[in-house]
Image (cartoon, rainbow, N blue to C red; front, side):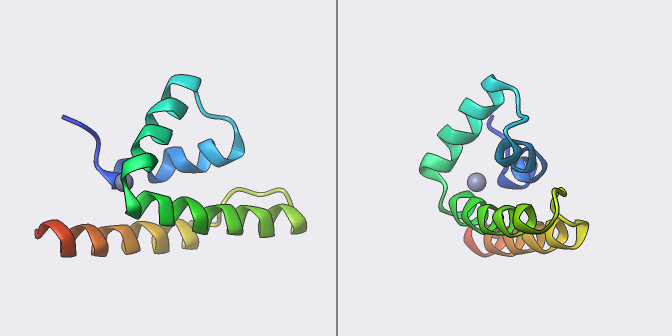
Length: 82
Ligand SMILES: [Zn+2]
């Protein structure tokens, strides 16, 4: 049984920061390869991370994490039902 997209939200943060365990990195890249939701999320996060880095070196703000996980949850429920 694989992990749900929502389980990846926090790991994706570290993934984009390059701080993630290599084995988890592989897992995420594999998942992103066949999951449109997470691809979109990574793209969104990448943009945000770039914006953040241009400003100040900080992690994603909690508000954005909430927004992303809410977005994912909505898409997930739409696709698979509750
Ligand atoms: Zn996913």
